[in-house]
Image (tube, rainbow, N blue to C red; front, top):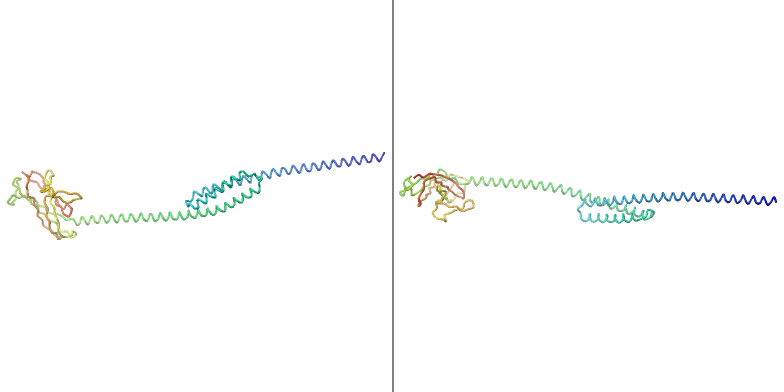
Length: 299
């Protein structure tokens, strides 16, 4: 009887011990499972964060590429920058669809990002180099343009000075009719003052000495105007060129001018009824008005 009780006690102790071991094992595995789930959650959270950071880096890189594409007008370089920007956009779209737990692909996308950054560094150097060259060329062009403007102004000034000088020389070379004396004569070529007796009007003057005028034959024109501003003219064809137009003359004479004072006499033969009033005699030579004299005829 005692042996039976003893065996029963041993079995009970063994059973309790087994249950305690099983409870300890369950508790251990439950604890381990809880810790693993927490670690996994933390790991997923970390991977999600890294993915978001990578997306932000891709977005920044895309903006950088876009910004540098506006800084150059070099077609070849611009095309390469656009290609890289397209590449970054495609990788960014892929990154957005990749799960955060796909560590392998995310690691590959990180390498792609580093590769694009290296290319961007090269292109940035190219853009900066071109911009430096362009800035230098613009500065040199501004200097050349300024010099051209200054040279043009100098040339214009020289041309203006030359024109002024030519005008002065031209003015200096003009003949000058001085000491103009008007005498009215009758048919016997004696002085007459009555209008009805005047048959001839004589004009005496001196073409003054001028060393700058080219010597030679000179055609002198006399243009006689009535008080009514009508030019006295023998024929309608009696015209000469003055200031780019043809004007009438009353009388002309060719003289040989040698640079010294030259007395000249010209006439107007009266063939019309003269009216009382103030007349004007203009004398021309070499296309210039060289003298003017007014005189009055009474009744």
